[in-house]
Every structure is written in structure tokens, then in C-alpha cells.
Length: 449
Image 1: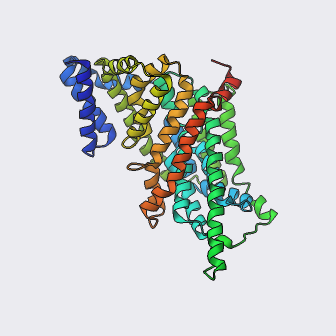
Image 2: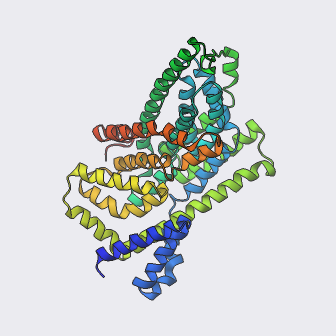
Image 3: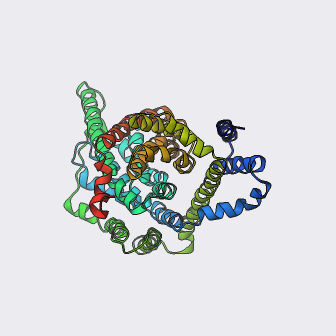
């Protein structure tokens, strides 16, 4: 059987097994093991556990459960609600300030937690009811939280970037730094749209009121005293200091990513104990339980994805596919466009973790051959995978929002996130035209490659 035929069979069987409804980790593991049985030496089956262990025996991957613990500690506490409330208190006078507050709260929380669903849940549970209470349309309220939550896989520490660094054999510190500029770019784009949309909805509410209609909560004027504003800070500042401290420890060379993740998790738990009194076993149980559950699920997906990639490599499927792509002699930017479109399609069905580990052996060699900076491409790919979190049919953040606000129709949620998808496309185009948005900061701090 030719490599092309074998590769096509491998992909077709994978799709059939996935569409059966089987969990992704088991689907990838079964396909990989099945092809080992039929197309590899019989003794290879005896090394399945050894292969999975060797692929996962990475000090970089050790940081994943520790970052998850830090995110769970913050996500399962009132920290997200307090962070949102503090930002809203200080920004309520700005047109669309509540929407901007949600974007900033999502960005800060994402940088502390590193998880998109956790960011959606923590900020959305407070932000969506508050926005709706003040007259914002349900679709806009849902859309801005769902989009803001995607920053969790772009702003460091990002579990997705950790996996990309392992798959592409790139510097994790440089990759984390490269995510900051594009993260700020998306925050600015989202905040700008929040101002535009809020002004539009305000004008509509005012026109209805002037014509004798009901006065919308949009038209109510809120006021907070300086004392109230200052009182919001003590509970929020320690977590921001924690975020800054973790980044300084990592980029200052004082600690490795795994040490930084462990330090961040311990400090987050300590802050919860001091600020919120969360220290008893019954209080810590949801945090530890959530961390174990999410870590186990994610590491199982990683292990099976790595086994899947190993089988692809052993059978020369990935090498043949990469060679075929190179043989097409596509221009540099056409190649990039084709690969990103492929990532978008995969995003319909797969989480970012699986997309990275399954596609890296195929797409990275042609990109390296074409002269692309793999750090820059990692950021662009991350933004594209962010789109997968908020576009149907499997947009994870959409279903998190539905869980938080079940009374908002799914149609409104989807239309609410659509403008933010367009803004992400704009961000990708800007990154292509101005790559220094991603590469400038790591080159300045760590030196040019």
C-alpha cells in the first residue's frame, strides 16, 4: 500500500471513529493502536505504554497540571467576580465601559488562569447578568464574554502554547512573550467594538424613549464614589501582583516554566486562604477535584495524540504528506493560507490540543522550508484556533455561555460572537503584514534568533 493510500485510510478511519461520538482521546488511541496492529511489527503493540510514557516524559508538560491548578484556584473562587466588579467600578463612565470592563477582566483573568472555558465561566457568571441588567442586548453580552474567554489560550501562561512549544521544539519563554503583543491587539480590537456597539445600542434605546417608549436601563446613570472605587482594590491587587510576579520569575530567568507554574499554584492557594478564607478541606475539594479531572482529561488527550502522531511518523504518513505539500511549490503566502484554512476546518471538530499535536508533523516542515518563523506561526495558529472556540458547530465557549445563561437563544449567542470572529481575522491579517507585533517583544528581551 502506498504512503498516500495509507495516509488517506488513516484519516478516513480517524473521521469515522470520531463521528461515532467516542471521546477524542479514546478515538485517537484506538485508531493508532489499530494501525499498529495491522501495519506495524507485532512487537510494537508491546511498546504502546512505553511510547506514550516517553512522549509525555517532558519537563515542559509537567507545568500543565500545575497551571491548571492555579487556574482552578482562581476560577473556583470569587476572584473573577471581584476582578470584574473592580474594573467596572473604575470604567463605568467610559461609553461602553461595561463591555470594555468585561474584555479587560477576561484578559486579566485569562492571564492568571490560562484557560478559556474557566475565563468564560468566571467572568461571564458575573458579567452577563450585569450587562443585561443595564440594557445591553443578550447577544452582545454573550458574544463579548465568549470572545474575551478565547484570550485564555493566547495570553501567557497558555497550555496550548506549551504544547506547541513541545511539538515545534521552540522556546516556551519566547513563545509566551510573543503572545503578549497579539493578545493586547485583540483586547484593543474587542474593546473598540464594545464602544461602537454600546454607542449604537444607546442611540437605539434613546430613540425608543424619546418616542414615548419604555426607558431602558441603558439610559440610567451610575455613580461610584472614590471611596467605593478604592475599596474594590485590596481583593484584586494581590492577584495582579501574583500575575506580574509569575511573569518576572519566568522571563527574568529565576525559574523554569514548571517551577513558575508550581509557585503560581501555591501562591494562588495561599491568596485564597488569606483573602477569602478558603483553606478548609471542604472548600479546597472543588478546586482540587476540578484540577485532577481537567488534568487527567487533558493529559490523556495529549498522550493519545502523541501516540497518534508517532504512528503517523513510523508509517511515513506525516513525512509523505509534508513532502507532497512541498512538491506543490505553492507560494509562501498561499501555503500559509491553505494551512490556516485546514486548521479552521479541524477547529469545527477538534480542541486546540489535538489540532497541534496531530498536524504539527505535517505542517511545520513545509512552513520551515518556506522560511516562516515558527514562533510567529505559533501565535497566528493560536489566534486561528481561538476562532474555533467560538464558531459552530463545536465552539466550546458558546456552550459554556449557554450553561451560564440558558435563557439566551443559541442563535443570539452565535450572532453575538460573529463580529468578534471577523476581528480575529483582521488580527491575523495584521500579524501577517506586521509580524513584529508578535516577534518584537521576544527579540527585544531575549535577543533576535
